[in-house]
Length: 215
Image (cartoon, rainbow, N blue to C red):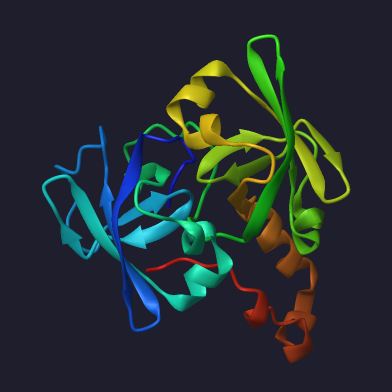
């Protein structure tokens, strides 16, 4: 479980193809791994990855074909910058919202412009996620917990303050940038709950639409 408050910006040190999937070596920059053990979860641009090996500069993680297909990880290259957050502890501050690290879909930056000292972004989400996106609701963009300022169909707008621009990879965004989206977890469970007893019918299953992680 994560909060969507980015701890550091890391980058991809190596990307190795392994039998159809990928092994990543990630440099974690200013993120301390002193309290991280093998098997712990670290969110990388919002995708929950499992540390299978710790290095002097970061960690190594395996990424499944499922995650490569359903997240932006398939587009990463050596040197790609990524947002990092360690899994939260029970004693941590809960500064963002409930984030699972399971990417629901890939969005795209439609437009961006300066607004005083902030930036305004317009992002297009996959159509199937539009029903979970609400005005003043929460959404996770590349692992960052953000508040939605405006909704127009499957597109939504964000107001990003200077601190977020400089402490996340949002400062790298341009029109056309693809990004990982995770919708509000509560909305997903509420949708399922409203199905009532019909949730047990196979026609109401969503196994073919599942979110991706690499745990």
